[in-house]
Image (cartoon, rainbow, N blue to C red; front, side, top):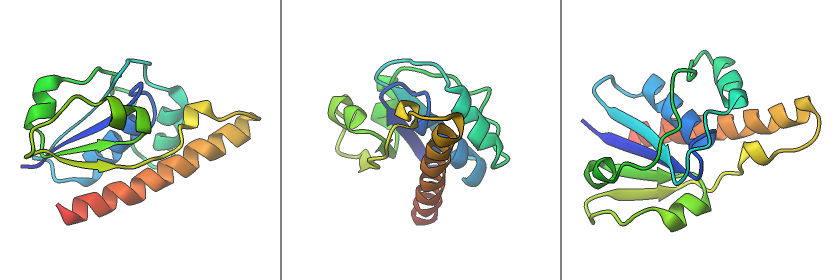
Length: 136
């Protein structure tokens, strides 16, 4: 059973969406988690745009990286440069991927403009998670 870990700076948007898609798309016996270098809380706009796809992430929580989980997972996916650069060392057996995606929480402008950024990042994460699951 594969064990995946999605990491981002605050575990509020990108890594939460990746976890939501992976839980929705992967076989039930896969272990899937997300975490951050810091805890910023679950972003309500991430919850909103995932709900538009029929995926409820509202019960997920922003957590800090668990060193034990990190050491025992099969794959770590970092979704920002900060997480990639500050991620604790992992054993050579842990594969790593880096998905450099923009932080939708940094989007500015009208409500519609910000939601457009969230949806764009969400859609890119969905494509990448589907590809990831197909190749594991």
